[in-house]
Amino acid sequence: MCTLTYVYADQTAVLGPLATYAEPHAYDLCEAHSERLSAPRGWEVLRLAADPAAQGPSSDDLLALADAVREAARPAPLPRVAPAAETGRETARRGHLRVLSSD
Image (tube, rainbow, N blue to C red; front, side, top):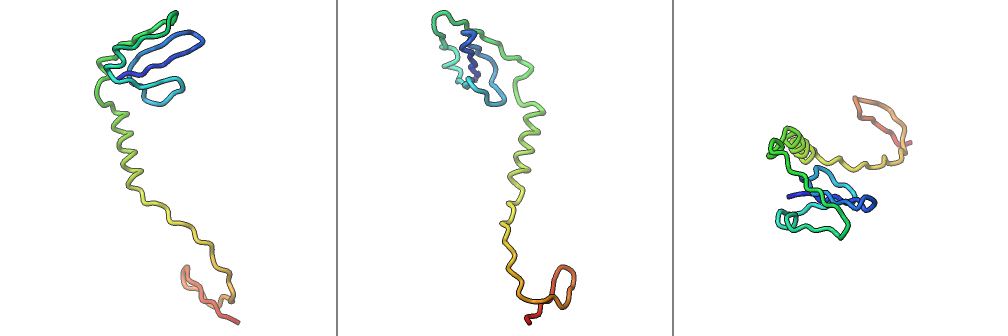
């Protein structure tokens, strides 16, 4: 897989390693399409070789995977319910509970 990035103003298309984030004017291509890539007449095509040391998962990939798992495991927040209008007077309290009397 490769990422094709192009700049109209420079009439340049760059075919390089797979991008790690989305950018405007960038498209991911499979190996077959990246090998057959051609550009319009007058355009320059730069083919950047992938760094062999960068092949395979990196520590950044592992951290991103761990963050995604943590996010998926986090419970969904409970919907907030508006408190009902109080019609009574507070007569007692025990912790977070209140006793109301209706007058």
